[in-house]
Each structure stands twice: as structure tokens, then as C-alpha cells.
Amino acid sequence: MIHKSGEDYLERIMMIKERQEIVKAIDVAKEMNYSKPSVSRALKLLAEAGYIEVCGNGNITFTSNGLELAQKIYDRHKFFSDFLMYIGVDEQTAINDACNLEHALSSKSFLAMKEYINKIRENCKEEIF
Image (tube, rainbow, N blue to C red; front, side, top):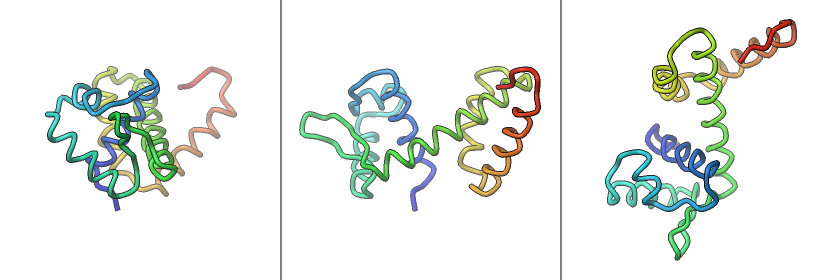
């Protein structure tokens, strides 16, 4: 079982990877405002758990399990932040709250919310988030 902090690292690696092809520990440290030693330790734990690989040149890549989990976490984050901004929450608050919601809500509840929103989207004449 991965902890919230591990999920945060996977999500951040995914976000960086969307913007640039190569992700290194220093990129993660800068993005998360953590020290290099803290990031190195976390990456080591994620590698030992089988979520990422850190190549000899320092490049971080996802394993298939890591990629699947990172995408799931990031999908939840985008859903919640987009939803909160749609209902009028400012962007920074929405992003911060999405970080908490993505970890706190069960998969069952998240899927129910997502299905409900998708039904609304199908029946709505205007674009919603």
C-alpha cells in the first residue's frame, strides 16, 4: 500500500513528464520545494516498491504499475481541480483542495461522482468542465 506522500511524488513526476521528456530528481525537488536528500529517499522507496526506475543517468521512468497509479492519481486531481474551479473556487484553492480530495475519497465514491458528472455532461446543452 502506498502512502499519500508516495502518491504525491508519483503525481508530481507525471505532471513534470507532461511538460518535459526527461524527469530527474532535481526537477522533483524544485517542483515540490523539498530538499534533494528527501527526494532521493522518497524515490528510492518508490523504486523499491516497484513504481519507478531511476536509471544510471538519473532519469526517472515509471514501471507499468507506477504509470497506472500515477495516471489514476493525476486523473483524480484534474477532475477535482476542474470541478472546483467550475463551481467558482479560485485556481490556487482548487488545486490545493484537489490534492486533499484525491487522497481522501474512496475509489467507489470517486467513480460514482465521475459517473454522475458524465451523466450531467451528456444531458447538458452547455460545456461543463
